[in-house]
Image (cartoon, rainbow, N blue to C red; front, side):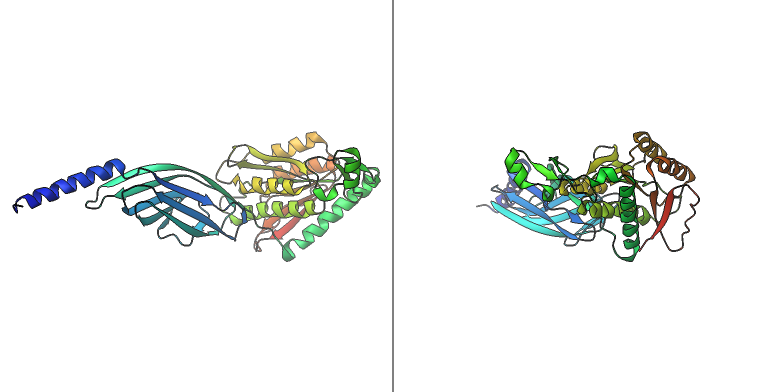
Length: 372
């Protein structure tokens, strides 16, 4: 071969290779991201699995996968992670033809939330140039990070006072609680209350009535508005954690729990409102709703939320207000609610240096819960 043909051949090879990669580089190239199926609690670790499949005759010596999720997750094993208004992960792979690669990323779940990955972008270059090809693939994976429970000295006195309030209302409405019997099963009833003999005899699920808490309800009114211009953001997270803790304790005691909040749902954009229930599935519903509260969105009016409860005139309910904000208009509405519903517990997560300023509102007990 004449020597002058060698450069021509190399140029033709370069052009041919470039054209082939441009047309076929992403043929049968797939990326699938999967969060673990089980929810976790803030502070725990989780796993995200990346699966890349290249059913193509072309190898990709540099393949970059890029995806984003909400802030609050720390990807321990990610080679390149940047945090702005979202968390962005850039992973680099080298994958041969007809090969599948799987990588598991360990995650520190630092904040409660509902985390999603909706798309992944892929970029790759051919063998002989820096020309980059680009594509996007949809992803549909999500994970709940539940708020953690508050325990120890900061919560035990609250729990004891709450149970005392429930028992005192039981005495006030004794006729409602001393009845014992069997009734039809509803979806909010825990399976531990099912009377299997009565169910087998009648052909339909029946549940036992409990005289110690039956008929009594706990309704949590959760305020997530900012208490001031400058404030400790973790105090609002403490409010959410308190709501989760109380709901868990009460449902474990078979006490129906309802939840209303002026926080807006990340998915629906509506304020959180959950009817009373006492099953394990109901607790999951509450935890998921608390996880989805988006504090970056504008909150609805808390006084209006309390006013809606006043109109319900629910005398079988024990109301608990959870709010680090000490606005006077909220306290006035709480006192109005207490005039109809009986004494109300108002839990205020505060730091040691913060003072409890609210007092002298009829039938409202203000309880400081120290932020740890």
